[in-house]
Length: 334
Image (cartoon, rainbow, N blue to C red; front, side, top):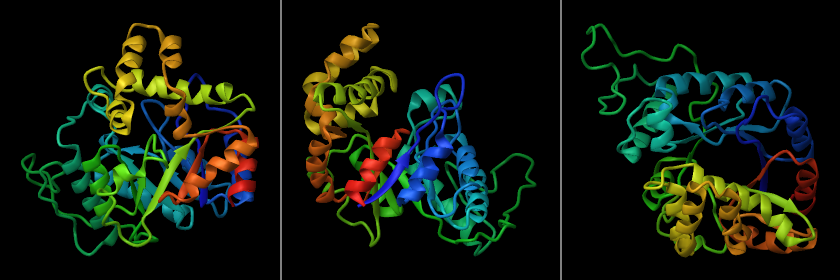
């Protein structure tokens, strides 16, 4: 089992303290990768450049970069540049986000996310391979643009990428999106995954290629009182179920419904939208939080880590900047 450190995205008036020190410690401990995310605040590439300039070995991942934020050409240029600067350490994790962010923040249309993802990934690979000037008929990312001045022409990346095949991971939740990920990507970035319920993904992951990675973000919460250990996981779940999506369309709610928690997700949403956030968190079952994280005493976490070891997950991305948790996980997992 490989380990990564998931730093997420920045929230609040200032960057979280000690992120550089956290990644330096993770690299020294033998962690394989460090990951940054983006929502509608900090971007995911700038911190990677900052971290990459101070590290030597640890891989640098985006988990995830929102494809509506950048054209494929912009992403391909950024990825190729960072890959060169870091000596070939970039992992490009991409995802479609959701309609609230895509339409509300980026002002882009959200329809056909699977088709858009397939086309986006195809253009990235065409650009990096430099086999010919890039032409893409669309319909989502036509290159050259149809119409306009009529002066657009196919172009080839003038930078020669360090690697023609930069690894692409896809953040996917729905069964069709997971199946697409298994077909076209080098790895999968699941959310709210349980090692006890992996059978639900058996069909979608049936045809992965050799070396396919599953890198799961996992909160490690150490406390001898299990209720206290589960609390940060429940707070995160409450925010995603209530605040990261509309009442009528929330992919995270859909996922947890497929996992068997449909009897309680509606109640959690109702409480959150009524402004009763503490009650929403309290309504989250222990089982829901416990299965997607590693919580409790050190002995309990050691015991429950076995389920992850026996699952198809290839890397645990330890969430947050708790150096004690990073050191503990290095001791028990590496």
